[in-house]
Length: 238
Image (cartoon, rainbow, N blue to C red):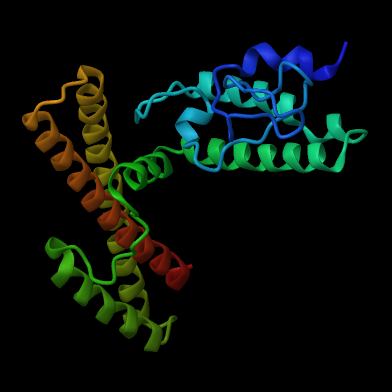
């Protein structure tokens, strides 16, 4: 039996890159293997990662189901199975496998998943903060002065040791703040999923949607800034 037949059924719920098979030009109905010529078909560049795995755009995902779906699809597109196929089929299998790997890495991480959904729903969230969150502004200025003083100090002196102790405490406090932000983000994600599940098309629902997306963007942006500060502190104090 042709290997492709063994995986046809499990992949039918996925989106096609085109409406016609690239090989025999027969009409496609959504699966990744043509029913007529059984050639592998490319994952659409326009297909979002949620759709890739047959998932709704929700921020709470069953990680075990996601993993199972990923391995199922990875087997279907694994390049090893296409070594004796045409160059086109080999290229498609490689492209599909790469897309699946990226999609899986993105969706299995809660932060990357939220950033990706925000990108889909409200435009890019990749803008990195260049200024600290307003409630951290004074604290960050003082922290930067402490870091500079520590770098200029004799690390073995009493002053150097005191500055190090202070920086360690600051790092722990900022790390806790980052965790608090992630907890808050989780609450917003739960609200988002509930709103999506209701499926309302009212102006009130749209207002609520925009509010949640704005909050998500703010938390993610602040978290990125704080994470970078924590990483810089870790590099400074070792």
